[in-house]
Image (cartoon, rainbow, N blue to C red; front, side, top):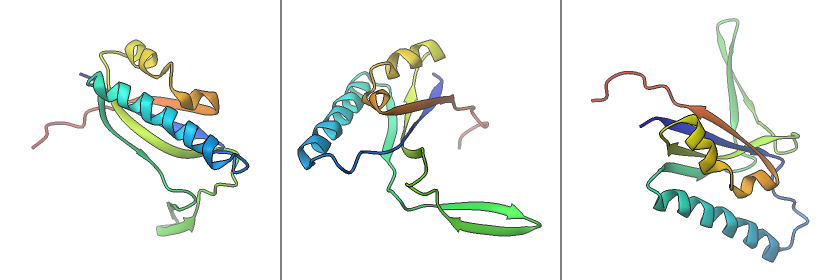
Length: 118
């Protein structure tokens, strides 16, 4: 069955929210993710730590490592899920009720198999 990478992009959680409001948002994500898991479709998912990260590039034959991306950016990558679905259409149905769509966007990409596993 095809696998899809779902990237959660957005501005992040508003720091002005109360701890109770933040907990309600976190609970929505937990419930949604558990629903995908109960359906037997979730292979893996994680929230990414902010603002940690490095950007690695090769420039003029040298590897360059810089801090970032920064949470101050307009949009950043907050987490991901790897989900199995029979088709792109089914995948879009699976993410249609994601709580992330209330505050950000989801990038859905089909994973291309790279050959035999061993």
